[in-house]
Length: 376
Image (cartoon, rainbow, N blue to C red; front, side, top):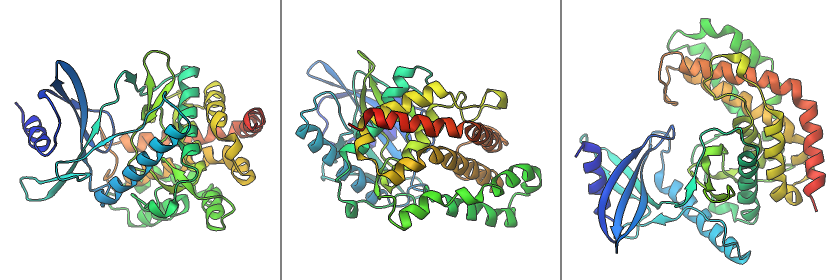
């Protein structure tokens, strides 16, 4: 048994999970937290759970993070019951023997590590990447459903897990500050990328200005609306549950919609180095938009609707800023496989911004078309 498996066994001793532990498997998906899938045999039935180590260098207040998740998942369960929705699910937290949301242990250096356990969602699949319009439609529908069900969630119960996560003007400002410091002497090689971003400073504040003036309503946002954060049913391909709620925070639905299109409708993955392959697939854009509008169209304000196409460009530019900033700082946030990984990601997103700009008018028109179809 390796060191990781022994650690997981030690953590599971703090939980009242019925049955015998029969397997531990490391799950390598995700860029932030470390995840294990554990199997128990209970009355001849195999039951699975997720054990996750929270990256507390990214999420500095794990208890606040888990209170967010507990509040949102409990609210979602009630809403699903009210709508007599037996088809969809939400994450289910398993508490410790002490009724805690987290299991806290000390590592070899006597530093605290934070672990949590979820029930595993069975008979479902998550796609890392998909060009299937049905999958993309259901991804948009899943996140639209998520926001619709949480429309009346008490916002005072929700805290920021990562401060200013989608505050694009602050991301821009931080990049400018770090360019001046240039801690790893990498700025001279990214002059072209810096100029590209500088020319688009004016769009960085559009969403945040609307939130600050309250023209854009504050809503519960997921903030990581990728296709692999939706569990799809294996039997019929419908969405089953939205997962990875670590970044659930107060924000604008424009964060979620913009990032959903950016990540789901791109023809290439974020680290594709052949930039000729990087573009927005309009068929997938339409599919995601229709799925999202099928749930959220009746809930949208005119101000939100008017900025939906622009949000795609803003959130894509924001990620380019984040990748470039991390490269300049020596790759301290995102996992990298090689020295230029974050630079390649930044260039990828910059190319995507260019393509979005070429298609922006079409996307504005289609968003209105989809809205009119589904608004009721």
